[in-house]
Length: 450
Image 1 (cartoon, one colour):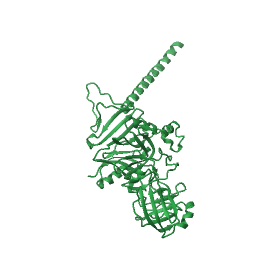
Image 2: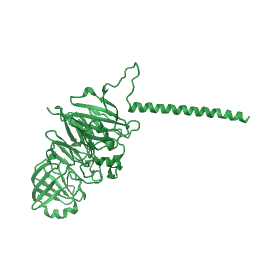
Image 3: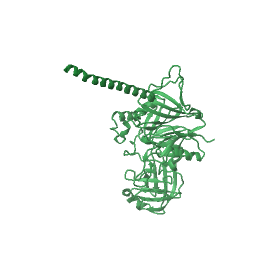
Image 4: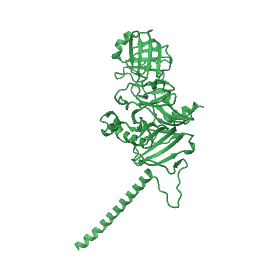
């Protein structure tokens, strides 16, 4: 009787176990199918013609590196000569969107656009491209560029921390300092991309050599249109910053009768027309404001008075940057002549122990970047923070992937939820947020003026 009861009790348990095993097998198969659909090219069924959206094309007989599972050509019917748009599926579990421009394309050029046409405040890439179209400029692709602050208690509703040059005007350049929001002050740190008048591409750490000569004394300028504080005690504010300096307790001097705009190689005489010891001066449309941090200002407040005259000098280094027409900064150079920066390799190996303030660089996140080789310019976005679709990349992984697809030089732009690639009329990637985040400036591929 005891044995019979045991057998009767055991039968339901065996059935339950078999059911659980079957369910487990079905779940595993479902996961494998899902992963295959997301990260692998589908295998056409025998006798059935594979169909894809008309805007997506898998190139025939494509030779691709082992790190790429698939490359789709997007919106091919909209491509002008010299322009291409691709979506890559990386083997490490990320989806990468790349807009390419042939450097010898006579109908295309690189350009930049500042959010709302000034340093303060932010704007979406879609909003910026809409403004450009109203001015008769036809953008083809744009990616979010520089780093900065989104807002603060001073009333800055966003402002960039990097170099920015547009149509030859020097609009922003920081002091290279190692603190939050900035990059290590080295050739692989605060890196900027620029285009010379003869279309040469440059990628360098750029330094401001600026000064005011007043009588027999010289005052060094640390930055243009940046935050004035103890780290950066002397800042020059131009009309491209906004309506006022938004400083607190800085000693400020309004300079007029000088030539505007500022450029990478600049000399002009000036006259001091106003002195303000409280900060937050109005920036005149025909002048600039010199702000000095209080501890340094005690000497200069006695030397600079209303009606004082002097000379303002600016000379960017490296010297080639003095004639740059379009320039935009990011942080951390990724590739140099097809080689990953040695500091970046050490940075990844030490999990950022060499630059702990940038700890997210050793983790997979959404990323944005610009790259180029002898033939092409690339605007790139890596999607991330979306399990089952795209996890993102570390900076080292991104540099390695860029090298695989033929990029020889690359710079890292602001990433995370800001990472977005606008191309051919829309945002083509899937940003980490369900909406397009306002950003500070845009790196562009656009049609050239006729």
